[in-house]
Image (cartoon, rainbow, N blue to C red; front, side, top):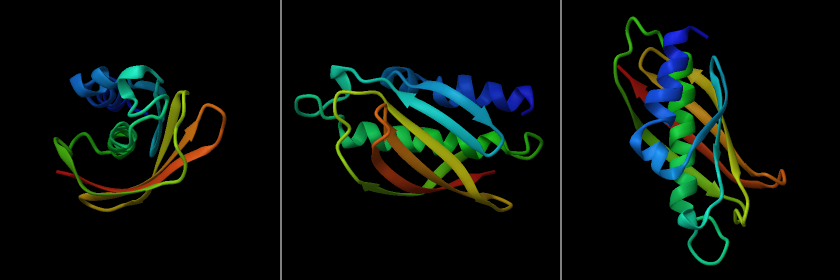
Length: 136
């Protein structure tokens, strides 16, 4: 992946102020595929050791955004925004790090569709999402 896109994914998207607030970490960056970790800590829970659905939703959105940018054309893409996001929560994320794997499944001229799987550190599926991102 070109260095500029890797820098955008790591520093601008995952390393944004909100990403840092959540404690997000880049695990892997490839063209059209990104893995992002949400480390478990009390600040992202709702009750007991259950990770808040909003924190999971944020993990999904950041991972999909990173995947969309990982294969973008830096000559034409200067900004972007999520335009649709649908999440199915499959099981609670309890007391463990969560890992989102986002893959581009369709890339058009301006719209990029990604699917995102979220798993616990134990390998159990926590959520599955479909995200549409607009690059312009």
